[in-house]
Image (cartoon, rainbow, N blue to C red; front, side, top):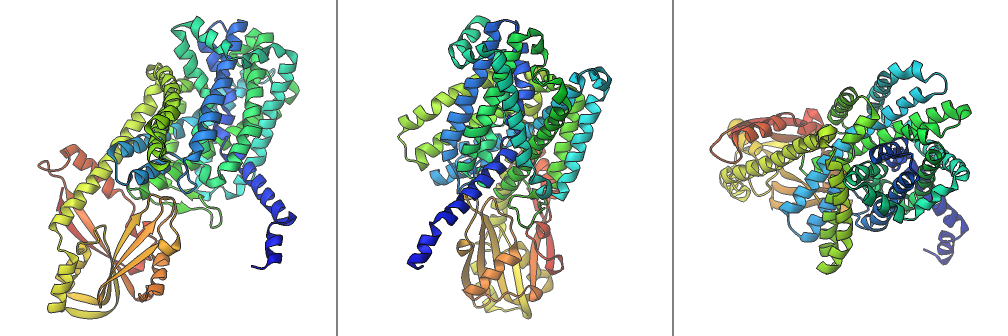
Length: 636
């Protein structure tokens, strides 16, 4: 590069382009990352005041507002924005990315780290069901507060919420690239409305600003005694969605998310909570529904429309997050293969998982029918989020200790305060178990059982297959000594055990009695990093003139595409023509056995999961016309 090119690259135009890109990412982060936490003002203060009792008292209002403000400071700003977002895995965040980073830092597979990652991922799905239900339902409940006509709309709250949610899940297959471009501007308008409403009421009742003093929070908790835990459980509703800041880091980057939070989302949220508190100080009856009561009558319907749009965007962000977590879990071997469809050829991360979409929709509709109101749903909210936050802190300790090389005292000093805070909030939310908090716990327990069964069953099956298999090098030597009939073309045999002769190869020799001119034993691996460079994608080892061993490596955020990846093999001297290549897949029919391995019921669960896993042809993007499947029966 010339000197002039270097000057141009760092000149005003390049700097302006970088700034424009940063602003665009920041606006995108506002639209996607902060939807969940950004819609919490609709119900968080209302529920906290209801649990505090004596909402009309000035000390109660100041105490609750102070608790919410300092929870936003401690959990979201200090914990996530300042500290946790430093623990990125190749730019990616989230529980599974952090688990993979911790495993890589340790240098081996740790059962404790694995379990923490599985629990965190399982709890996320509970959040993925509750967030759309509570967000959209709380917006629909705004119909009942409409000036003059609220009673007319009361019977339509539940049905209207159901219609919106069904429509939202039905459009997932079409992708969100078209509507996604409006997320940022809509949420920007939403936060502007939150801040504007807050400023208007703070100006009328500036005494609410005393809540900035944390002593009011302490006084409220001390004065309420046993009720303090119930209050904290409701206050935690204000920080649900904080995990999204970390989970979506790979889409927007650390800088834009931090800027969006510090300069827009956090100030507007704080102003709105204080504004609601000011309204309740001026009119104690507003404690029943402070968010909708603070909206002027003349602007009510436009504000309600913006509220509905914001809750739909919040729901969309969580649904998209569930798809992303599923993709990571499948790639890391925690869940069976699933059909994952790209809905955009240009936008990374735009995927659709039909099975997850259907299960989320069923769960959301169940929550709407079973709970019926956002207040009752609030009782189920919080446990899943606090559980995820605790697993994040524990994994952060491992990363600080092993990846950052901190001494154990320093790592403990970093994580212990947050673990205590999250533990207190978990204890507070545990009071809600009987009122509905059991749902995310039961859902997470079922998913943990599924993930543990899938990984354990896969390990046992691999061990049994390896024991019974013929070593690949021995088979090659035998074939060289007694060569079978040869046919032209290339045969690719997929296997998870690169040292053993693939099952499909053995059956092809046994039943068809032929061997192709070129044979490739192919193994697909998943790295602990989100993405793998093309230079490191493919490794080729020549075992004999007609046998090669090929290993493909993908990151846990990537979608396998075998024909495309094998095109890279030409650079390493491997002839590959898709039209003269056959892919041989071994399909195993499993028979449960109580004598070995897992309990019989767990064997049956594993077999069920295996039968319902996506076809490898679809998962690996193999042309169906080039696939040959050969089956066998295995006792597990």
